[in-house]
Amino acid sequence: MAPPTHFTLNTGAKIPVVGLGTWQSKPGEVRNAVAFALKDGYRHIDAALVYGNEHEVGQGIKDSGVPRGEIFLTSKVWNTHQPNVKEALQKSLDALDVDYLDLYLVHWPVRLVPNGTSELFPVNPDGTRAVDRSWDQSETWRQMEEIYKSGKVKAIGVANFSIPYLEELRKKWTIVPAVNQVELHPFLPQHELREYCKELGILLEAYSPLGSTGAPLMTGPDIQQIAKKNGVSGVTILISYHVNKGVVVLPKSVTEKRISANKEVIEIPKEDLAVLDSLAANGKAKRLNTPLWGFDLGFADWYGPVKSQ
Image 1 (cartoon, rainbow, N blue to C red):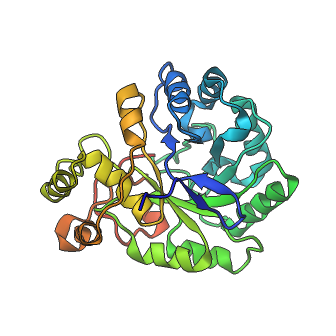
Image 2 (cartoon, one colour):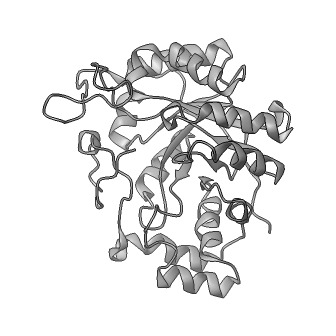
Image 3 (cartoon, helix red, strand yellow):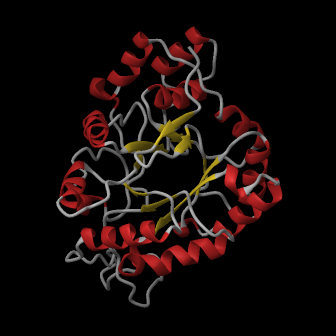
């Protein structure tokens, strides 16, 4: 039985199971990466205002020659823009040079306060992030619901929301988020969050599915053994793991060979999925990307070194 090519959002829209992530893709590289990916068969591009490269992402879309209507395009409202989601959305639409987004996400459940030190990453005099601890995320979501009703975004969702944050949002939402994009891989499987979101009809998306630079995921003996058994690479196992679990996966690369390889998905036998599901509980648990405000989000499962995103 072949793995699915699309999942269905709670809006009824179809979303390709593999998308090209554009975080950390440098200027001068991301344009070609997006164009190549779309020409190579990708139909899902994941972008964000804070990545600082949406203009080039838009250029890559144009270069590809693939019609806009065939592409599932995502962006995210950044923390400093939460008081004015409509304005943030327009910034992304202008940069990408498109009229609408297929999905728009609240990037983090935290508001940062612009104070002259930085437009996107403001800091206090003591060097800590300028977090507005009084900000109610339901106000951000209210604005997200408004732009959804405007038709400029076809679906709305969140990113990096743990269960407590979703529970708070749930008290006031009238539209259930279509997606929750989170760090997800065998070292951080987030089983409880997965079940919680499944019950509410929220689709999970996995970023950093291969870990990050220097991460031990692909070289782990368990993953290598499963890869050898199935006659594929460790990368294919890590990407296929999510699709087999009903999760959209967002690998990122600017290298053509890797972009092509990253879209390969296989069906993984149940016994191998069980091994992958158990790695974190067997001492491998590790969060690879946590911002400087991570503890403010109540990451009870925080294990790794701080890496700002």
